[in-house]
Image (cartoon, rainbow, N blue to C red; front, side):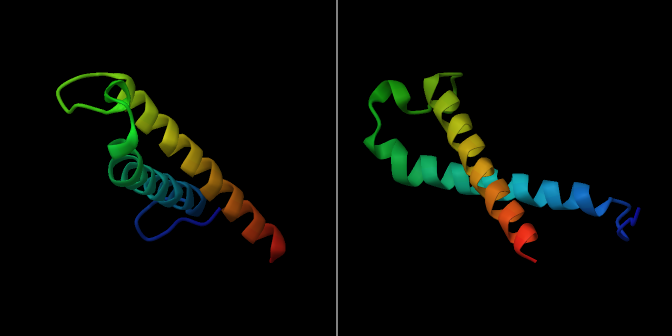
Length: 78
């Protein structure tokens, strides 16, 4: 099993990058595209745990699913 210079295994490093991409893309999608069009109950307020936070989390999970699907198809086609 190979280990990168940073001491992290390649599979862990790859997964960490995919998760970071999913969180950043999901948050950008939620805050800049969807949130202005959501009803007030679906908008996240920074000082509260609310439904908007659940919607944001769900979007990040869906984006992670697409990133994982794209990555698997890319690896299979090689």
